[in-house]
Length: 177
Length: 109
Image 1 (cartoon, chains in turn cyan, orange):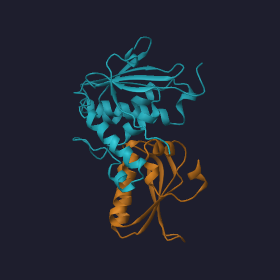
Image 2 (spheres, rainbow over the protein chains, first blue to last red):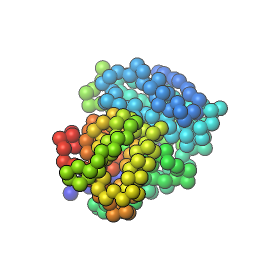
Image 3 (tube, rainbow over the protein chains, first blue to last red):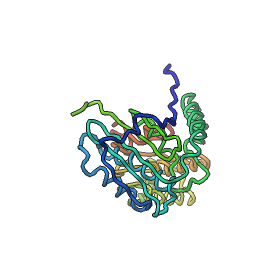
Image 4 (tube, chains in turn blue, cyan):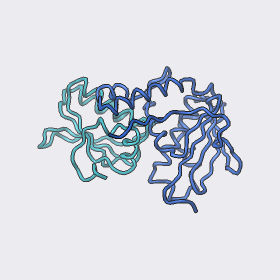
């Protein structure tokens, strides 16, 4: 039987994933309608081999959405700052001006219960826990983006001490340039 | 995204065919269309996702809500044609494990 391994969202201000040296930079207004076009803008020169169909676009879009909607509350006066490096692997730092992901510890507890139910094949319990619902969740929140993110960002997904900045990286098995 | 309704087939299922991108801007159309069919008394409903080119967490959330609703209402909800990136998203979020799928070649990709 495979062991139960539960990943966690980690806070680590000093993590190397927050080193923006050599990364490109762009910032966006916090407009909900722009989330997908902002994502496309960041990825417009991304090498094809990193795109994996539209999987990279989808995963980056979730981070940008979290910053614009949950971080900045879709306040267009607040900026979303994005650093990116698309050489050898894909790496991003996304920072908003909000209060930070205050429910991070609760989310980790939720994820532990969710994955334990799945591991135990308790599908009724899993179905009830399938979506994270935070205090401000609404119909445009699927409640599962961070679950997939922990799987997708295979080189790490780290939050800053204020929890309003996230650094992520994905490596690819076909290697570097 | 476009939602097309197909009448009951030989297997007894009514089918909603989803075409295009199922994302944060339009996933509610899928939720609304499927819940409307269930509310009208459809007991066997299939969501055909072969035409879905993009699926994000809001789309996955819509699927979760439909699975939860169908279970609560005692209805049979199945999915077909899940492939490519949408399938990878559903696998990464573990949601594929609670979706009843038709056995099609696409489902094995």
